Length: 434
Image 1 (cartoon, helix red, strand yellow):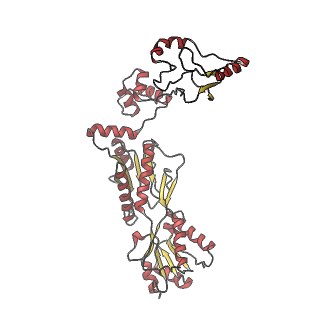
Image 2 (spheres, rainbow, N blue to C red):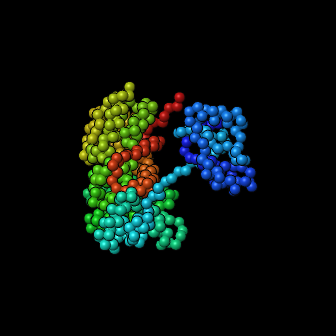
Image 3 (spheres, rainbow, N blue to C red):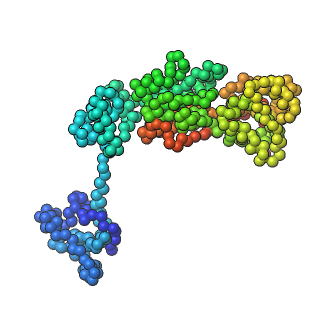
């Protein structure tokens, strides 16, 4: 039996030495090498090809002078014995390196390295020549590998702990700018970074002590290329950083200056989920109270989920939402008495007191659900937006960018969402079991 395969090479592997010689008696192999290489395998065409093939089959494929059967070659095809491996030579071009560029230009690898890193110790004309040569051969510097080698040289071995930056900003007119949500983001990010061999350090931007240009200089001098941007209440602007040196992830719904990858809570899906929980417990008139700015920050995803559920869920009555610029008990009381919701969803647990002041008894007559349990001031049911998991996931995405050597503002920024987790509490009636 023979296998027919596309012809790739003229070498036959004997399964032992792999040197391309045909197998024969051991004492004859060396002496016949030159003769075998001088006699190329016959090329058979037309009728001769068929006759030659038939003869080989009928004659038991006899070997010539003790040699194993050579492959019978037909243009573009080769007939090979079953079980005889054919060497297939694969050639590849090695990736360009600092040393290969240095050899091609007749320069030292130190000069080339300094030029590509922008150290400023190389003549500008030489640096320009080096950068053009690197671009022509497709060289791309890996900052993560460079940081690893730099750390290993400094520490003389040991475990490398790459450094990531978590950057925050003080917003003077906002209460509690670095509250518990940011702390949980950092906690989850630090734990995950440590598991992956990195260290996450916090840098806080303010007008006096830490400006964006100063932060940019610190990050570059320390060789930090991964930047985790913490949430801002107002639209953030981190565009003054030289993002050609950094990979970045924003831990909130959207950032446009620059447009980075984002990781955030899935507010829409979380609202749909909590309303479904309440419907199963018999609530039919849910009401939603939120500050206007808070809903805008989530791109109206909480309110969109609420409206969608009202429109599509049979048996749910449409209570208008209460949106106010700030928390206001008088406005809430007027809304509550007029529309009579049987359960209220809000970020503020003081709403429970306002409901009770209007005659409600929670949970006997009315229910309450917190949309972010991190800010509760008393025990209640609600949503854990899982900031610790958000921080961990953001760090994973950031490290993955560094490992792929993806620096700069992404061409196609993505958003990764994590749904909030329902937490039972004493402010809603228990779920009835079937």
